[in-house]
Image (cartoon, rainbow over all chains, first blue to last red; front, side):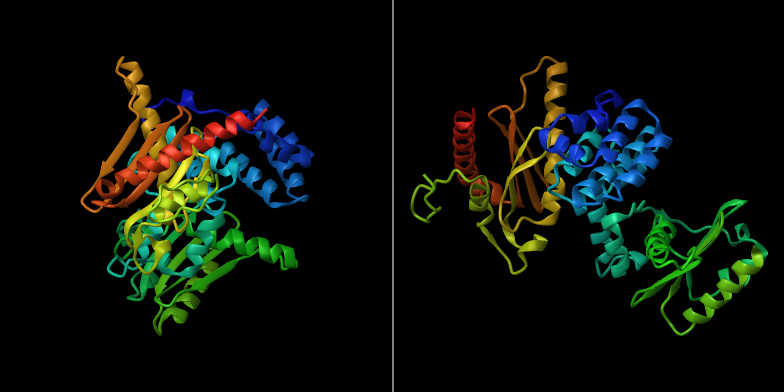
Length: 265
Length: 147
């Protein structure tokens, strides 16, 4: 892990280095075009080409497209997210050469203290480990296709939360409240838990399903586990995430949060 | 050439999955997939890019996660050795109080990776050597056969 970034091979070269990967590109010209644009560094155009490529979807295309998305993150300088995305893909497509090769290619960027996603989930599932939303089957599933930037949230001062949220933030059934808005990130956490980018995970998957059904933009999603419930709200750039203990007060707290979120907007 | 691996006989196969399964067969425990049993928990043969060429039956998930990383560590070690003008290491063995992880380079471009509970390494070292021998032979055979 002492290697420099010079050892990282660009994804386009990696895909070009093997016959089986070249054949995947040959089957989907939009994907090949995306790779060409990636090689030229035209990141915005890559996203458009990928959208077109994914219309002709198959498992190989999905894997290579996911590698390209991770490579875009790496090129943008977001190495941790690129690694997390590549790892999530390798977990799902363990024996796919593109997934395995791309993750292997990123090893020099991996921090030695980095925890593998599987290890994070296994640790969260341990009976004597601290309770977390990682315990819910939803989060285990989400690791398949979502980037789960698992990190430990530490306690934050309640004073950081706007006054309108104070009642909810002080409720005994609340485990975590995280607000994103014009003021940046604000968080209240009772105890320590690994949840990472749950807002993104909760929303993006549900968003796609609703979009396919023609239901319009998703505004609220919730996932209920036996011990905890996670709710996520979004309105434009504003978003909120709340984790409650699954007891009798959870639905009432969720309703309060919905009301506060609407009023705060 | 493809005789099954029989107990009491000198084992032989040129199927890399079968060769690795010869190692993962020496394991006890009720839930094989979680790696909770004792003995060898995972065995695989990989190329230098970390792609699997053969994987033993019932390898634990943690083994499949760790194997490419272990190969990378051995390759990193080789690079450091080269930079300090030392001979290239040909295997890497890591042991903690509970488990061992073993990675050995063979035929220059291939790696055998084995993990298991502490103590199994010493117990099954001969079996690991035999597997490497079989894998070397099988891969040489493939090279000879390829145009």
